Image (cartoon, rainbow, N blue to C red):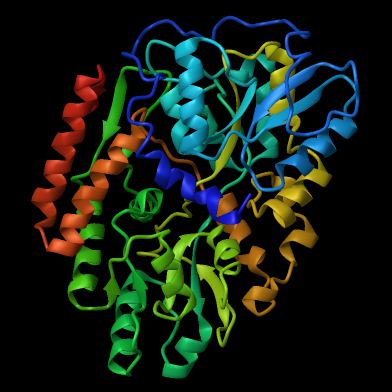
Length: 461
């Protein structure tokens, strides 16, 4: 699989998941409360990988991680009681569309499925829950292995229920062109005030590009920018399934949007859509002196033709507002057990164990390009001391690991893709059309409040 598909998934998913089968009216009975126990049901399942151990129970997996077949082979080699039968049905939106079809048909879903953390609430809210609570299979014992934030993301509110096992994360950081800052004698910014000032200095000293870019379509990226202000714009707790939190009119949110609008009007940043070919081209050709985004972007940028020609890349913490600015995350995925799992306990064993080995953590980092969320890997000397050639042999994980470990978790809505579509429209008006920030955000709040109510939710005040 081409690397560019992995983190495009969140962006593409918004256009296809608007009417998810998992989003029934809230407050009904849980469809995943029953446990299935048929170890023979997958005997004839067709696998994309080669199952070498014959006569052993199969657990089906849908996943699109790069190098996932290597991960599956390592797991299967280490287990004699269960074998993973893997299929790549497409990434992100493609996989979700097929899953939604299987939910409607009440058959055809995998036992275990890769699900992005921000999409989890869409499958465990409403009249039916289509992901199994893994706490009944001892998931609590796994908690200490993972970072605080990644584990909170899969508990959907921080309670005792666990609806998936974390796989990877996206520590929010800043890539920057050291050669550009050195050439123009401008200090690399550490705060957003300094970022604005550095942008002005670069412009005044003749830099033909911009210090950076604000992308109104940057869905999770823009949520991360709000989270840096300690703003919780979206909130959902699976233990209170009828309630959602939406807060897009707070001073913190208004401050963030006003900041980016001002930088656009001053000509300090552009407003290109992110994850487009043009966006990648501008990163590589030096049109942007910085890119503030998830750490996984590093792997994609270095894979673009010409990325290292005359460029000296480095990574540092994302600019902060002040000393209270928290470490934040952008993206990341999980392994969840579906309510159609043929042998639920065996599926839970796969979800909890697929990445939990030294061999597969190595694959995750070196072959998949995933940023780990297991503390053992984050704290390993070889990981921390790894020198990334693309970043001028910088010990990049020395920067990124503390961000991953400092992240405390975040909530998303059961209709997050709809919220993303609407926020993109509003942010576009603000930064490209100069619309009034306060009234535009109030309109966005009303739109999402109305939609939530129409779906049967109560918006917390």
